[in-house]
Length: 366
Image 1 (cartoon, rainbow, N blue to C red):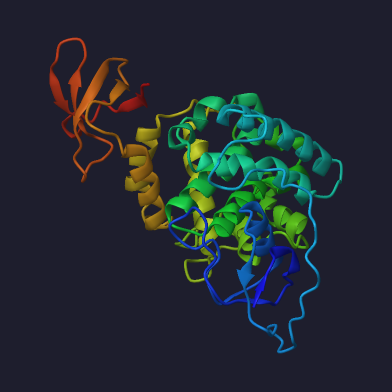
Image 2 (cartoon, rainbow, N blue to C red):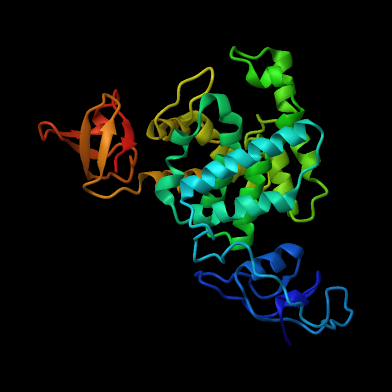
């Protein structure tokens, strides 16, 4: 039978693919309905879905009368335009300011308001998956003094983007993005002096930091709008496949897949951003480090999606090198995507960067 999304209840079974403006179903057939599915259907403005006559517990499904709902505050995925016609950067800055306020509330002992968070973050994530160039400029937006707040929003944006590029369904990559945002919420339970310290941490101070994923998990464990995989990802985002992570020292057999998407996003943004105690590094230099030094610690599929996203430049793309000289890309060697063949702007000389390891791409130019 066909029902309006407002008539759905937890435990209903969707019997036909629900399609939208995506190549994959918004929700595939044989999905048991949870609250997140109802939210997704509302955002896509789906008018009806096909469901089974019985719920998952075997009881009859008797739909109530459809509810006349207020207009959705955020436009459906596909339009990617906020009601205020904000740019991606405007949305990002608003999210950082909002996160800073939420973090202050958590530090004061306040609870996590997931409804307020979703109202700000979900439109940003919807914009992010269509703004590839902006994704890889996020490290320019953060500042050392506000790094913690920028980092959480950037983790959210990058994680959602990577999950989207890995063909996760809408509801899943939104959950991944929300988990990315909230992964460091538990830092609100860490001594502010430790967070602000401009010198290397002592072993005791680092032990405080290592507890923050557990603190984050405690903040979200009873929030129904977050899926179980998202909650586990928040707890596990510092775990590593080889068992060297924290807080539990889990290995690849016990680590939830969402957590690795967040872990890669976390590492990439941290290494490309300016910190109080460290200058930022070129995204291309960071990618090379990840490919060479981090093998076996992070999910290779996630890393490859990140590498492909950043190095998917075309012939003629203008770049700036680490020696501040400008050049254009003339050939991309897929076996060394961070080290293409380039032509220098000033004299036309051609370099193959894989033969000049002292140089690297500093930035893609407009």
